[in-house]
Each structure stands twice: as C-alpha cells, then as structure tokens.
Length: 326
Image 1: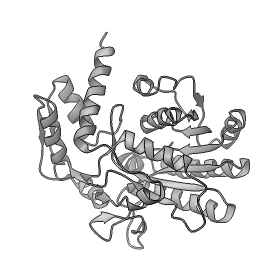
Image 2: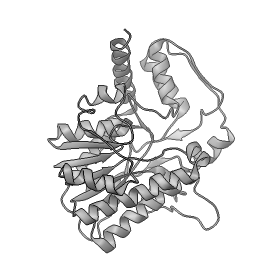
Image 3: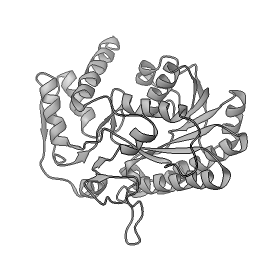
C-alpha cells in the first residue's frame, strides 16, 4: 500500500516510515519540515519520500494523496506536550484538532482504506483502577484535562475520528501511545538526558522528578503496532476503535535512572525525590496502560523490556555520535 504518514519527518514518524517500508509498503512523509540528521539515520530514504505540507492545509493533503495514489493515512502530526499547549492553546487546537478534521475529510472524500491516528495517554482524565483502560474517563464536568490543551486536543481528535467512523463509514483507529523513547527522541522525559549524557560521559542532575511514573515504551514497539493497525482487515461494526499501545508497566524516573546506571558504566545521575507543581499535575494521568485490547484486536504485544530498550538506545546514540563527530 501507499501510505501517507503525517509528521513522518519527526521522531516516531521516522520509525513508522522505516517499519512500513520494511513491511513492503510505500510510505510518504507529509510534514512542515524535512527530516533532520537523526531521522535520516533512522530512515535513510526520508528525504526522497518527503512531501512538504501543513496538516491543516486540506487542499495540499488532497493533492499529495491524489498524486501519490495514497491508500491509507497514519496521522502522527501535531503539537506535543503539556507546557507547549499551555503556552500556545490556539495553535495546539488549530494544529491538532483541525489537522485531524483535514485528514479524516480527505480520507472520506477520497475513499481511503483507513486512518490510523496516533493519540496519547494524555487523552485520559483519570483512571478507575491501577492501570489506565480505554473505557476510563476522558472528560470531567468539574475540571480540565491534567495534560492541558494537549490532552484535550487528543481527546477531541479521537471523538472526531469516531464520529467519521460512525456517520461516514471511515475506517478509523486511534492508538494511545505513551512515553515513547529511543534514539532521535525530542521530549526529554528524563530518559533522554540520562542516556545521552551517560554515553557522552557527562553528569545529569534533576532537582525534582524521581517519583514521576511513565509507561516507557520503546519506539520500535510503537512502530510495529502502527504497521499491525494499517494491515489488519476492515474493522467490523461494534469493534473497539481506541487502543492503548504501551509497555504495560509504569516506571518511576528514579527507576529509569537505576537502569541507566546499571547498563551504562560510569553513568552519573542525580534526581530529586519530590515533584514540582507542574509535575504534580502531570502525574495525575501517569500510570500503566492496560494493553489487553491491543493484544486481542491487533495481535500485537511489546517486545522491548526497559533494559533492552535503554541498551539499544545507548548503542544507537553512541554509533551516531561517533559517525557525526567529524
């Protein structure tokens, strides 16, 4: 299949491009900027497969879909993060929500096979148990989403896609990913500076954050889930269309620090045992994700335990640093 990957020049997008190509598909990246050096290290054909465009530019999406004979779309483009969304709420909704509308509308009008939307655990408002299940609440009549406008935009985008599925017959599937890490990642999430500084022989110090939990998920696991989501047969009416994709086990930042120290000799990491006010808010939607539905519907399961992921991340970053040193 010919598959458009919005945000295909980004971190997760570049791994999705590589995974789709490895599975025999022809991925086309649709992004506002081309792939950087790290993205090209992940997927060497990224520049050749890149088509410039803004996800809210519906006319451009139509043009690229037609010219490239696109069969399906992986929608990964968007503004990411609590802090950025609080600083730029209008841009967050414009890009994330209206971008999803543009993608769904193009898929509807062109009769594309499927849209796979990269959502986030940030869509959750709160859980009902020890882990977050897809049926847990994404809305409260009393207060806003703990992940700010970012989480709200993901919640709204899922609802929009489901409405297109129900009323326009669009084969829409949302994957709620969380704490995706690996070589080329952009958001720190504690793990990026821990690993990369350790490889460089530099110390890492955090004043706060030790108790912050995340369900750290290696990027190769996320990319493989996207391939499964694209390739699965047409989704039958009544089938769950929102699925958690994660490792299924939350770890604190302090536990991640212990793993990095164990796996990378001479790693120097210090992390405080309290949370900042913003971390306290963010921690409300941080927990293990229940991945039973993804296992059942996609036939997918994570293959990268945290130690293996950190080890592979460090090796890839070390090789890249050596190759680009001169």
